Image (tube, rainbow, N blue to C red; front, side, top):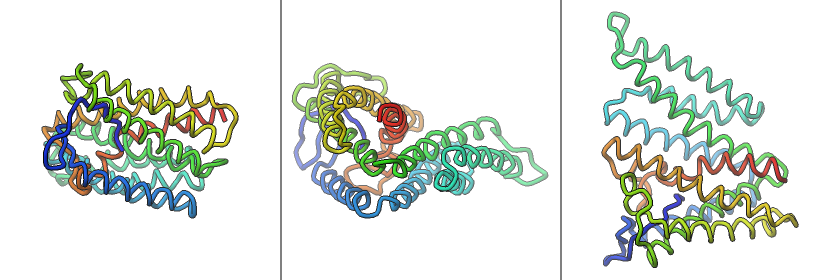
Length: 287
């Protein structure tokens, strides 16, 4: 569920020039959306399980791509530590997540120090450890805000709002990009995104946020949507650009291939992860 203000038009064979296999993308997106709805409506605490599985897969995808690109990140500490960060928030809140993150960083420091045995000094120690810490902050730290929300008042509806607004941003950006996209927004990073697509994302995403405030969060303060909508659109779009630049640095198109028409799990989380933090912060402040 990535915010993609595209400037592409449809191409033959079900694949758009934006690089998506549209039938596959719609089918996978619909299935994921149905699963999210069922979990949040009937088993809200199961959201932790959903996010933890997605997080483990996404961490493995990113770690594998980094290792293929020459960064010797410690895969096991990243996956195990990420799970510890996520699940520590259940009994201990965000404080538990920060403690688990600190512990994971310490483990990675020792792990990397002796990765090549006691007789050999590690290569690129600071570089690889810095990249590993970035992965912790980028994936499990931001994901924790998405799970922490579900335990708050109207928590499942807050998570619904997060997902729905990001989806609205994605749909609005894609439609406007296909119909009107002519002016590239960040051609050096993601040449298929357009300013017209961003405008579509802002319009549809903001309308979606206002609708969520009124009918999902059930508050008369509809103006909350006017605050949340544009913020989420900008953050989601920026999150997608950040992943695009990382992939450009690594010389790859997608982080994975698990989801037909979408790429990998991480390619669906790039905009949701920073948006989870913003949604948590805005709703904690305004609701």
